[in-house]
Image 1: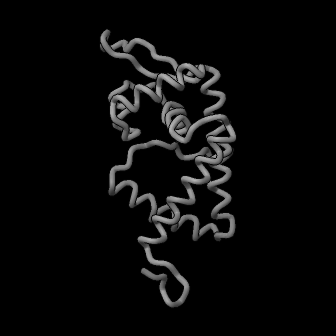
Image 2 (image 1 turned 30 degrees about the vertical axis):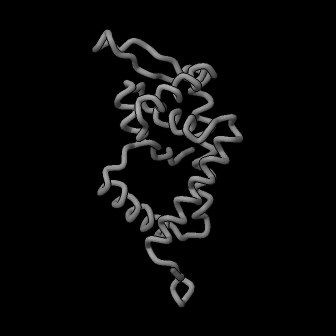
Image 3 (image 1 turned 180 degrees about the horizontal axis):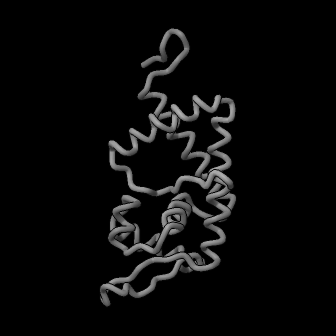
Length: 154
């Protein structure tokens, strides 16, 4: 296992190492907002809309027991709430509380800023190329929407 002779790293190492970098930024931002990384993910997913427990578990890639614990802890912190599902009286939907929505927006904005900063040395065309290529990886592998595209005017 070695890096290329010319100092460049290969695709696999670059993707794995960039994952570590993004996860570290995400975890640091979550910690500074009093969240765990998983709670940060939950809040970001719920920014778009409330979700049923099974679709939330599938989106986050969590087993039912893990998701229940995550939602329970986040609900105790006053950030999410369970509401009856209007389509199925036996089911619930998880939604942000007003406090959760405010914190989600702050966390999301700060996390976007930090991740955007990683490419601050890139030319606009390089950023566009990176976005296209990573977008293809995400789309081709059917990665769920766990983080929305930032609003360009943010």
